[in-house]
Amino acid sequence: MKIGLIVLGVLGGTAFYSGLSARNIESARMAQQTDTLKKEGKDPVCGMKVPAGTAKTIVYEKVTYGFCSEGCKKKFAEKPGKYIKKS
Image (cartoon, rainbow, N blue to C red; front, top):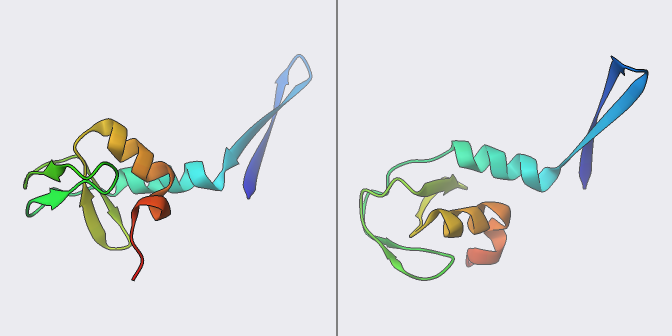
């Protein structure tokens, strides 16, 4: 699903279009919701151990997930459902 924003400018009579996807909006929202990991955890993307106190986290569906790297954090933010086991 795409959400579009049309911005009309008066720069030589040119109209501009900026398309934002729902996924990009969700990723930006999750990136703002971070916390410090309270206890040792496991990176949901690669499976590595993540020490307590790490700031590389995302809060998703009221659960704080810790990551070993910014790369894993970015992958999770793009498609969290791919990495979370549903019960």
